Amino acid sequence: MGTSPAADRLAALSAQLPAHTRLLAVSKGHPASSIRALAQAGQRSFGESRLQEATAKQQELADCVDLDWHFIGRLQANKVRPVLKQFSVIHSVDSLTLAERISRIAGEEGLLPSIFLQVKLRPDPNKGGLSVEELEREWPRLQQLPHLRIVGLMTMAPLEVEGAEREALFAECSALAQRLGLAELSMGMSGDWPEAAAAGSTWVRVGSALFGPKL
Image (cartoon, rainbow, N blue to C red; front, side):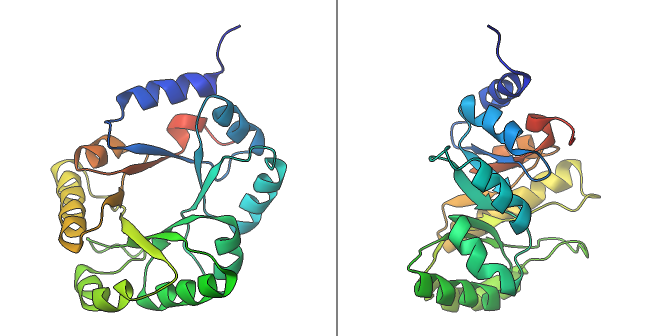
């Protein structure tokens, strides 16, 4: 019996990843059956950005007890509590105010989520994130928040940034994480993950290259 297309894509992509880089399968927009197929092929970490969609899939996949769910979308303040209950990792914490809210609610719920601070290294009206100046200014207060683990930085390259400039952006983010003593980097998607991995990314967020086109 042959392997599934999903398993073939997973094997091909995994073979290309450097040892320090893990694969986050971006499953938003794809059905639970597609997630199950990848899980059966060995993938464990999945990224979702819409709470309602993720909730339905998590319920359908309740028998897959060892899946690792990451929230990768923009996190609205009123969604913090339900997101914390369903996701162990959040990649998109883009302000001190949001981090403070996560810490407070996590404390109330007895949780200790891992979070990535989202940084914006180039002007981009379509993306949120802390500037380098904001991050460095707020860093002492962020470090003191008790009910979360700041594990790394997340960034996305603007669509118009390509080639050497994109490589430079990822290198800047890597250097910033090192300055702050953070070990993790969430950088790179289907179109630019090789550059991100080369710059030290520890998580690449890949959707279409794994799942194929959305149904």
